[in-house]
Every structure is written in structure tokens, then in C-alpha cells.
Length: 100
Image: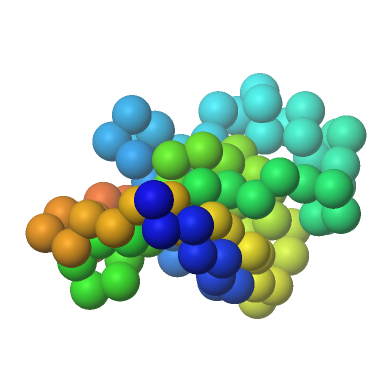
């Protein structure tokens, strides 16, 4: 495990294949209603780092989408849990590309 914390633009995160269409719209709407643009107390999303430093979300797709949508230009802390230098995450869609 790497366990490195980075501050990055959440819109640039790559979506995992299981969530390639983006955040669940109902879950996103619920989070926006409950938390708005607040990040205080929000658990850090988990990411894997691949080839070229690309970051793929493992946990926190809805949180990253909410912040990318409501707070463009704000950086979000993420926890890098593993390194996969041979994995090309650059082919996966970004959070920004799937914003509702």
C-alpha cells in the first residue's frame, strides 16, 4: 500500500470501469441536498495511480463528482492506496467528462 495523500482537481480523476457512466444520479442528488459544496468531515476518496500518474477512483465517485460539479477549480485530497505503473488509466473517462 502506498498511502500517499495528494490534492488534485476531482474532475481529472478517471472513473473505474464499473462506474464508467459516472456517479449514480440519485445518490449524487441526495449528497448535494445533504452536503452541498461542503467538504468538512468528508472521507477522502481512494485512488490507484497508473501509468503517467493517472489517478483512477476506487471509492468516492459520487463525492468527487459533487465537488467537481459544485466547486470547479477546487482541489480535493485523495488517498493513493496502490501503484499500478503498467495500467493505462488514461483511456478511462474522467469525472469531468461525465458531469451531469
